Image (cartoon, rainbow, N blue to C red; front, side):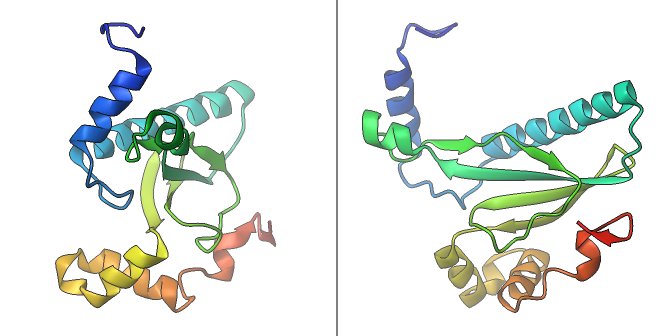
Length: 165
């Protein structure tokens, strides 16, 4: 049993799935956005603490996060729509947006200035958004167009101290 409930993990997953039976990973709800915000803020805080403790000068780094459907829950508990925010990776090198789907990137400068870089959904979702651009935020559509035209990255994105990392 979990704290503050008499339901088992499986029952909680079943309840979550019943409330989100139409949810896809690309569909972001206020609760998920709040959890994502908390996750990013926590990563920024912890990274700043490490830098202060070890006297590390880190002018810029990236927070890379994947949001996935929980496959284990789908197979074992028959709850196909449980969404999980995987542990964020703080890194000085910029990951490529082309390496996978359903991942997000923020950059952090001066240990506290957070900037959204991109969000790459599944290919089917990208196609849908580009076919129906009027239904989505114009800057997000612009970013996805750059992504599909292989123009989302610049060489400068991969330089650390003037060298390709």
